[in-house]
Length: 501
Image (cartoon, rainbow, N blue to C red; front, side, top):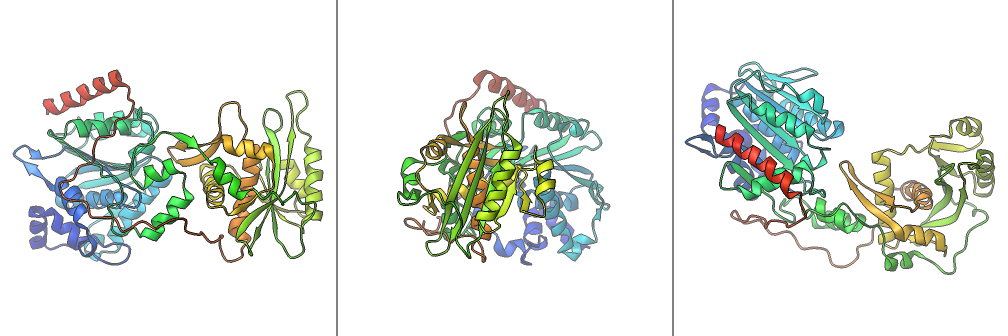
């Protein structure tokens, strides 16, 4: 337990609690690792008070990936639980995975510090500090579960994790109206820059920027401010992410939601005019087959790849497609026979198949073929997209000339979503060949080398270490299209709420 003397000291100096009681996963106290930009731009505004109480009621911290946003929100929940009485605190994330990360962060702080561990009771639904009566709940973006929150306490704290991920505005509206039920309330947002200027994240961000002289606060520096981000790691990210995704995640800039996946010069570096589709594999080489099934409107595509250690590249050996129609869909038996032929000609390769619409085939082929299921989820498509982009962008793929494949790859777009980014075709286009190639290339790159993925060769100069952000620096506003009428109406409603309080 924290002594009464220390408790009174922490109430007078809340930042001392962070420095002395928050133990990071590496075992060090936060005070030993804290950087000046955090002290001046994050924690000082959180602790600022004036004659009316908290100086800032709505705080928006927009920071690059890896800048400890979730860590700050979890630490703030614990600080409030120890130092303030009878608070209802909610950490709300955009999805269940992010909510799980936030919960693990919260429990980690508690378990690593015996003084805190004895002060909390952890249950499945909430984390309670019996001495203060404060309760902390971690939620994902299920809006119906948020209605009715906040009415049981005079104090209400809402901690929004990665607001840019939230779909729609219903969740925010439910939580913000819940704050009106409490006499003493605060909302703290920790988020990356987004891509949708019609989103609630952009609206709240711009509200804080435009009204920084009231009880709103925005800290949104562009670029890397966290000193623990290594230049070589950042360069690796630059090489593996499309420019607009890198700009949003790491340079902390709002970008458009889509853009070109690969350029003509990048693709030309990967095309070998002397290479041809292979009829059979070479002895001692491990091959990988990806199958993307489309029976009617979409095509069925099958790709075969291997990893060539000598040149450090993933090589396309063969690519085949079948086109069906609503009247004459793709014949599954024909596809099965092709897979059996690949099995004989390419040294019993590893097959990766989408199980949707292929359950009967999987049952027939298991045992005779090395079958693996590739289920298209947000995570698997993200991994496929990142790997394919990195290989093409870095010239680490060897393709034979194929006009149809080249046309499809050049027409692909990067689609940014609330759960990350992925490749997709433009309206009226196709992505079947790219998906089959991507499935085979993903496993050739990660399993083919035997000791990890292909090496990344640095292209160009590595960036110098980021300069420390001055204490008074504020990011310039980003001018992007916006729905003016709806935003002004919402701003007036928010401003009216503050005036009433």
